Length: 68
Length: 272
Image 1: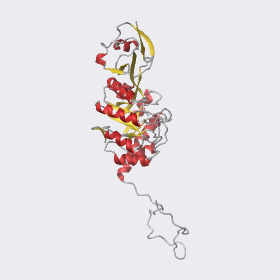
Image 2: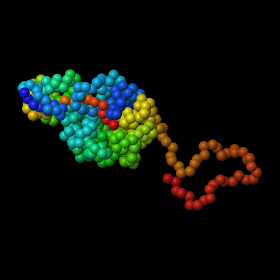
Image 3: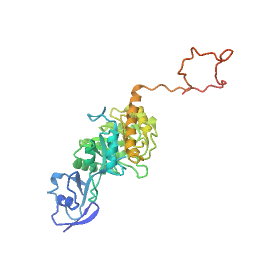
Image 4: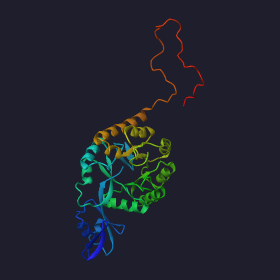
């Protein structure tokens, strides 16, 4: 297992987990969603091939109400 | 027509989506406001959240303008803009880099750095800035597509605190000047447009009003009225009254010579 910080919470992912599986872990379907891995944007085309390693911070964001 | 980075918008009102009770009220207010652009913020996915703001706004006919609200450094803001570009397929960004939580005033150094970085990366950058004319000029020089000075602090509803500075920004800018933050009620929006702003961004004044759709309608009219009043050319201010009915042909209804009705002349104040 790999322990990562997913949207601020510690999570156990299976070894070899990718950004894509991390997004799915959160129950997000991926539409309108963007991911930063240790503060760097991971383009959607690379989600399936980008492995999430022990101790990394994964932020999965989407648009919400905001502004003024 | 408001033109930003070569794109034309019929409406000069940009709607922030913060503070609405729910997406239904937001959509109704959005329609009433006539806005064509609406800001959204980027936050962590919440699996329990219902409804998609993007779908609701698009259904109401608005385009999405992501912001970088909540960012305190250039680095955070740049990353947030890139995440928004990924998530929403737009390279437009309403750039905000805040200096402190109490005033929510922009951090000028971080803001300028973020603007330069994002412009170099191909973004169309619309920066929330203070009412400092020099910072506005620096942002324009950095390649920003508009400058968005505050009227007063975000959510304060104080209106325009420094009309003089705002006018200096308007005079100097070759890009659109969009008043961003501080609007409390319709007259504030009208005043900003009369002063020469190209557009207004607001949310709280509508979203936290007792009747958001009605206030959205009022804001739409205020923006249109202010713009029309500006192009109509207002009368100069005078210190004393100027009669609007003719003095010629007045009836003599009392005996004797008609007198001047002037107050006892002291030192007459100089007209402003």
